[in-house]
Image (tube, helix red, strand yellow):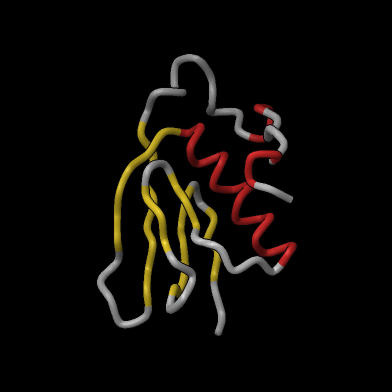
Length: 92
């Protein structure tokens, strides 16, 4: 599935996401092996896009860069990505 064709996550999956919170910034932590964590904040809509991309990568065993907001992360040596109370762990 092409990332441009990813479906929209239903808003009811994120009850805290509404007009009042859509512009809030939410934490993201990316951890590479033997590197300090990369921490930044992004909008809830970017978090939701990242969920879809990460799920698609896992489901289809894709080896493409992971894009969150305007940042791109190569999968090589990545240990985990933590966002919105979820942790995606990478092996290999």
